[in-house]
Length: 206
Image (cartoon, rainbow, N blue to C red):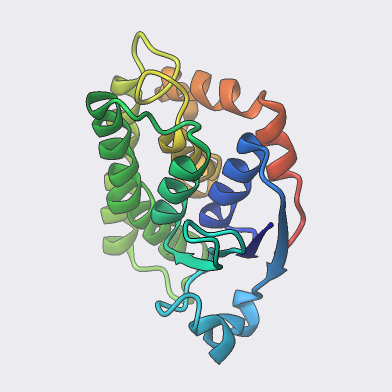
């Protein structure tokens, strides 16, 4: 059994997608980030950076519970645990890892700033909006180019796709017209047709 500390954000969706795709048994512990649950001492013991998601695997690698925070680290841990969607061949693994890190370092943080200044900031700041919308468009162009001639970002379906999809689903928040990125549009349609992805995205917490 895996305990998932979760709220319904793109980073939270990454892990529910992985857990459903890998067929792992899990239970959700909601962390209401709107009410600052992420700053509670019990949660900080699991996630010292006070961010969701985090997990506790009750059957860790030494037969004891292990906690993991940061969504990319969780995806890698689950991939290693199950042997699914995370290749063991080094060349193939590097391909997955570089696109996972691309999401963690760019396609998540930059789109998150886009969401903040476009949707949530109390003051509209044109410089900030332009900066993050332009960077969002650049990142979508990178992804669109990578998907030419292949169905998934690293060749075969992997944890990198599970990381990218939830952020791409917020394209309307980001000032993105998917028609400008036809390979990304097809990619989103392809991934959201998967039953495990549909089940994960249907979870209503947050």
